[in-house]
Image (tube, rainbow, N blue to C red; front, side, top):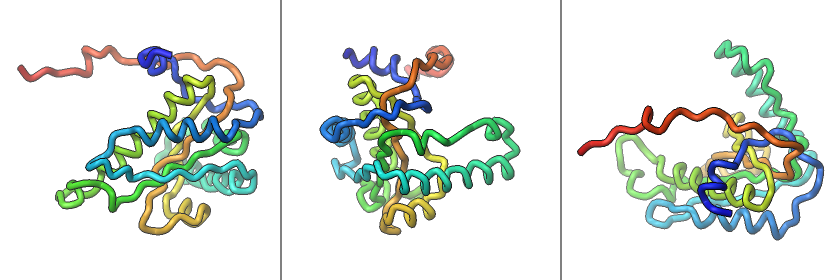
Length: 190
């Protein structure tokens, strides 16, 4: 699959078939993530693969708690309609864990350590594109409290659960979301 075709064709999937994803496919997708760029080539990521239903239920409960809190705090009405049931039905959840100690020189900057987070984001994007190329659907999920997620997944306090990648065969097509014109978002300095 052409990289531009993969970028334009990938969709966020919230409706998965129950079909299992073979372990070798999961590892291939994670390997694509590990080829992402990172500050000083520190590769600040770890991956936790979750298939066990009880753990998915705990993650769902945390996401539902955060959704309700977000609705109450922000007043954003769309959160009333936003369902997180896909956390229980996606065959695989891949938690991407970042290590702030592997951030690069930005550790010494006033605004702090963000390089490791950007590297994890690049790894996540690679994983989404690899999954799409293999005919699978994904969703980039972050609606959880990091402290609570560390407890649920037994992640050390010095590491950061940056995202969960929901993975499985999509149950249907997803329409392409609208995009703004590139010219509206670009400025050249010449």
